Image (cartoon, rainbow, N blue to C red; front, side):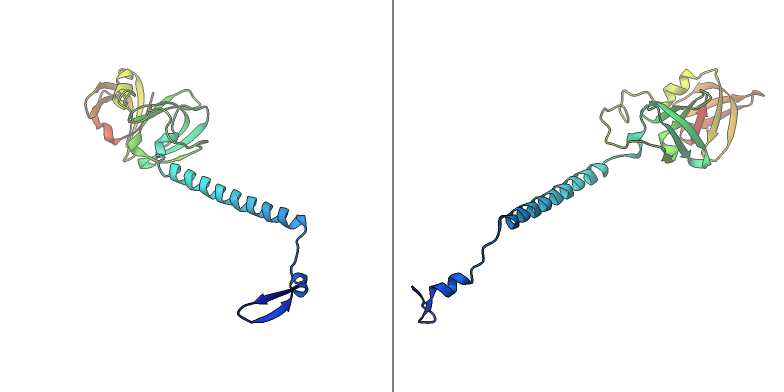
Length: 192
């Protein structure tokens, strides 16, 4: 039997053509399929990583600050360092309790660094930044007439009692009954 190739116009024997054709054992096909599955797995992992990175780009620093049994270290303006467990996440503050059982309120606007967060994720419920969550001013009103330690963003400290909570300030009296008004935005931490 001969095969005629029109562009060469000559007859070639078919036997020599069939002798050059290679056949592959079954293992090669399995290897090719395994390679294809590995490539598909890598593509799937790359897609999953892209989704994770996109979601993490939407996470705020405060999203991880929710009530938790884990101890955090929070550094505030003025070098104030607070260690404790988050017990409340309000609309504009975080309340922690330290190892002595003291409650500490930190306005969210003065937080510089947080370490010790176990998980970081998108906020599942609107507890943070929501209108229904308790504000720092509400927390301060609950502390009226209580002995507190107040630190401001410029590292100024006062130990005394809260006399009055205004719209944007807190009136404090120290142990000698010296009265001082402090802007709420300047408060770094308040311990009660």
